[in-house]
Length: 388
Image (cartoon, rainbow, N blue to C red; front, side, top):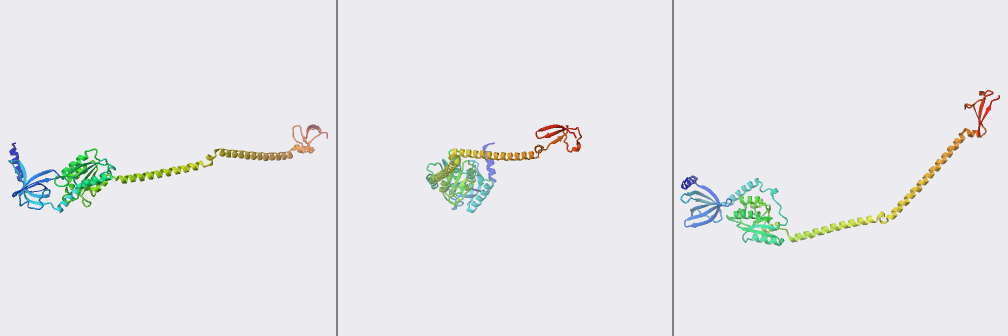
């Protein structure tokens, strides 16, 4: 298919669109006689379109370079040149209320995606070796961050990327600088800063492209845009928000004087803790050494020796007394046995008469003349015969 045919088809299709509303930011505004030429740029997509119209259409105080507008225009495609442009019929400035409504809608969308969740925010390094700084060229915000940070920690190093911080090129330049610093392994934290301004001036820092780029960064990001009352969407997605550029410097690097004082305080506390521990252990050791067992070990041996001797003597006395009592009991028992013994009776002049088989004769009537008997006397036995 020839090129002319293709262009004719494209032109015919565009011609059927009619009038459309297009929103963007004005760049390259030129007034030539009765005709005004400008470029309408989409900051998020980094795309632009040429707009042409009569001077009367653009006779509006809001139509200035860098302004955000909505253009009611008719699309035109010139087949001979193969160029596309818009012929403006009406131009309206984007109002503050409309901007706020759009920002609120974008805020809800990004929040629903979880880009503002606290758990995804990363902590800042305690003492970064290199800090990435994205700021305007020769801006007061740059001086505030550098001077305050180096006053707090003179050894800190910065890699500064100067960019446009407002206007149609701000989003692209800030995002490019962010990606460059994020890819640098030496950069441990990135600060994006600019001074205060109107809502329109701070619009690039609520742009969806910038917000998503910050969310995708691997390096912790600190947002220091405007003053305390300013709150672009960048503040919500950044890992930390600083109210001012000076506050950002205080957040990314510690104060060397405060850290030295803290070190001295910890050292004194450690010294006191160690001294107290040593003193307690020394007191315990002195108490242990003062005990008799350690103060005079021989005395303890002697004391135990005396104790053994006392126990031995007590055992001897107890054993002697027990033996004496047992001897007395034995003598008493022997005396009783002797008193009850038949031998004692015999010694008093009595005798025991027994038959040869040993049976004791208890009555004279049991005897017959001629019976043989045994008579037991104290000193022995004698055989006798009964005569009558």
